[in-house]
Structure formats: structure tokens, C-alpha cells
Amino acid sequence: MRQYLSPFCLTLLLLAMLACHKDHPAPVPPPPSSEKDITLFELKKADNPTVLTADVIGVFVNDTIQLNLPAQTPVTSLVPFITIIGKSVAPAAGSPQDFTSGVTYTVTADDGSTKTFKVVVNHKSALYVTDGTGKLTCLDPITSGVNWTYQCGTTSLSCPTAGNGMVFTTGYDGLYAVNANNGSLAWKMSFTALRDTFNIKSPGPAFPVPIFVNGTIYGSFADGTVRAVDAKTGTVKWSFTTNFPFHSGPTLYNSSLYVGGVDGYLYSIDANTGAQNWRFKGSGDPFIENPLVLNNIVYIGSQGAYFYAVQANSGNLVWDNTDYLANASPAAGNGIIYTAPENLIIATDPLTGTQKWYVDHDTVGPDYNGMSSPYVANGKVFVGSINGHVYAHDATNGHSLWSYNVGYYIFSSPVVANGRLYITDMYGHVIVLNTADGSSVWTSNVGQFASSICLIDSSGTTYHPAESGEQN
Image 1 (cartoon, rainbow, N blue to C red):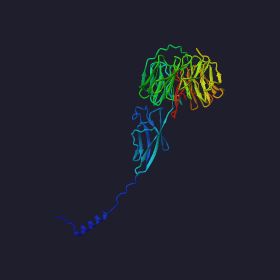
Image 2: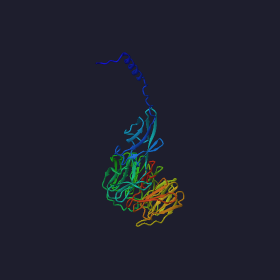
Image 3: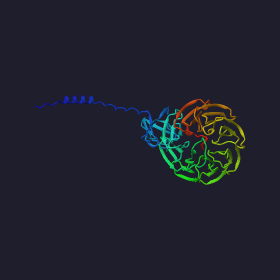
Image 4: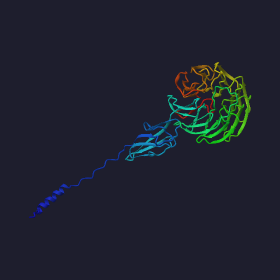
């Protein structure tokens, strides 16, 4: 038998259901987050394979992120990996950026508020040096650690120069361009060296130092040419040809190159076309060191015991001095020309050729007497000697300030940067001294018959010895 609820029970049930179904307000969502931060900024080798040899993690200093990269690392198209707290970051992670002047990144939170970070690049310093076996080495000039090496053939090389993210050196068989960030070969301009029939007797460099200027390498080479070469590709722009190998490196001044020949001529060559402007003949003895150009006058010494001052625009003789054998390139500072022929350091008035002072170190080597090319910095003149000493003198009067005994023959020329002197000896030691008192900082061995060095500091300033046409 069916049972039915009475109307009264149905009413009570309906009222009970309505009582249980009261209106509740919808839940209030939490406010949008204001959190916004960069938690990691990294340059991964995998994302930047052509410029990085290892991952680089940014260092946070408040709202600045510092990227510490190897010297000369290209920074115009770096791809960052970024992790954030927040809604978005702009520019976006993985987007290539030009960090030449730094890049500002903006992180946006969920609530629309923003926070900015400035990402800047710091380049590490680097020291470049070659040895008698054809090896090019990159050292950390602060710690002496080896960053990389590259084998450029099997014979001696010139002192390196650097620019455009590359390191350049030359030898018997060509001009080498090596990537500065990882030590790999970028390109090589090959040539065949001419036989040297001149009686060259010098403790100086075996090969002239190439120079880097505005994307072009200018060099005087063992094949008897002076060339302008595109630094990026190795393409020859022009070539000036002789019948003898060069020992003197080029110096650029006012769109002209100046280079000495072992044929006894000083050449002026148009840097844009390679055409000869003029040539000056001295005593006929070989020029084996690079010239110095100062205030429209070219200064160069020959192996025939002459030192010349020649007008840069005409090749006319201004003055000459005799009585010493010039095996070292001149340097300038404090309005004075400094030379280091044979045993001497000589300070000379550049306008008249009048001697201001000289110091005789009476150095004696195995086959010759000799001093390196001098370096002038902070009121001091520094020079290395065949007797194994490094000397520092007051640049004004020649008074001795200090000396340091390396213990081995010194054939290279010093470089001074940021209060430190860098020089090499015959047995391949790189010696670093404090310029204030000559005390030792560190010594490292890179291979016998090490060249003079080229150094780039953390600010990007490049330092060259006096045997380079880019001398500081």
C-alpha cells in the first residue's frame, strides 16, 4: 500500500530545505602579488657558443648585475638566461642584446608594479706573449694563471697585439689572428719568408710587431711586404713590396705608415692606398727597430751608429746624432726622447738632438752589449738589460731609483700598466715587478725566448712596448 506525506509534512520539509539554503557571498580572491625580482642572470656557453668557453653567472650588487667576461669578449649580441619572481621581464630572456653600454631589465609583478636592474659587462685583464717555439699564451696578469695557449707554427713569433676580439702575431710563415676569448684560430694570412742576406746583429725582436688601428692590421713582414689587412677576415687591402725581409715594425701617424728597411731606407707609405710617399736614406746601414713619431717628426736609429730625426711630411732631415749603435726603439715622455743604445740610456731634446743626460750600465752579453727599448711612465724610465737586470731611473735627470736582478739575459722590452712592470727573459720567464720599488709580484714561465708582452687591463686599455708602433 502506498504511503503519502501529508500536506503539513511537505510544508515542513520545504521550509527546512529553504532554511538550509541561505545565500553565501562568493570567495574574495587574494590581491595580485607585488613581488618582482631577478633571481638568476646567466650567460650560458650553449646559448653563446661562438663567444663563450664557459658559463658566466651574473654577480648581484644591489640592483646592478655584473657579468665578468674574458678580455675582448664580444658583447654586441649576447643571449642571457634569466629566472625571475614576477609576471614578466623585458627584454625577454633568450633575446640577444648589445651589452656595450649595459642593458636595463624591467621585471613586472602581478600587480603591475615594476623593478629595474642594470646589467653591465666587466672585461677581465689579459696578458699576451709568444715564445721561440711558436706558442702564443694568454695569462691572467693579476694571478699569472694560464687562460689558454695556441700553437702558431714552430718558430719564433713577434710580440702580439690585440683588438677586435682577437690577438695578432707574425712569424716566418704568416700573420696569425687568434680569438681572444678561447685561443682558437680565427684566420691566417700565409706567406713565404725571404732569405735574410743582411748582417743583422740584434738582441731585439726577430719579427716586427703588427699594429691594430680601427679594424685594420698594418704589418711589415718577413716576405718583404708592408700590408694593410682586414682584422676581421684576413683580407689584404693593399700591399707594398720590397726585396728584403723587414725587421722594423710600422708606426701610423696622420694617415701615413713609417717603417725602416734593412736596405738603409726609412719609408713613408700612404696608409689608405699603400703608395710610397717618400723614402729617406741615412748612412745606408739597416734600420731594424720601429720608428717613433712625435709632433710631425720621425725618430729612428740605425745599426750604423746613427740616430735620425726626419720630417714626417717630407722626409727631410731635421738632425742626426752619431757614435752609438741603435738596437732598441726610442720612446717618448715628459717632452723628451729616450733611447737605449748599447750600454746606455740617453735622454735627448726632440727638437735639437741635444743630449740632456745619459746613464752607462756597462752591460756585456754573449755577443754584444745591449739594453731593451725603454718604457716611460709616471716620471720614470724603465729598461731591461742583457746583463739580466731591470733598471728604473728618474726620467728628468737619470738618477737611479732601483734595479732588479732577473738572473738571465733580457732581450725583450718592458711594459708598465697600473703600477706594475711586465718583462720577459731569455728562458721564458714573465717577470712582474712593482714600479714603486722594484719588488717582485710574480713570475711565470711560458717558454724559451719569450717575446715582449701586450697587456689589456680591465678597463679595456691596451699597453704595448716601445718596439711596437702602438707604444703607450
